[in-house]
Image (cartoon, rainbow, N blue to C red; front, side, top):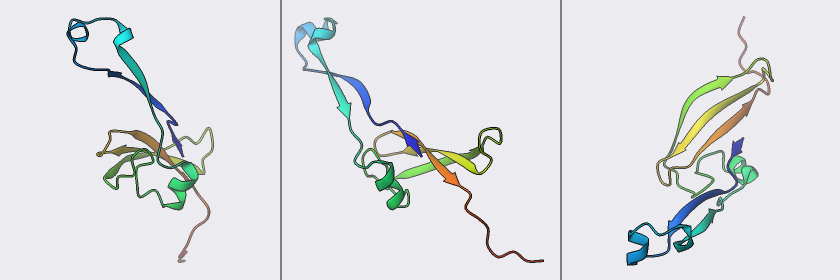
Length: 101
């Protein structure tokens, strides 16, 4: 599973007149968002919460597989409605069940 370990966004320091007039980046600071859980915590939680904010309001897109890289691995793009983070869930084929002839 892969996800951004840190996301950098620019946040305004305040609503002073100079900032409203478009003064340069000196009136802004960098904010680093750190995930609430690492990839192991996410897997231990069965992927039921956003790794960035912990919200359970997440949804997945279509599954993808690249047979040229490793045909036993599939990826699914995930999205959090709570904070807007995106990441990919990674799935590994470990076997099969209930074979009927």
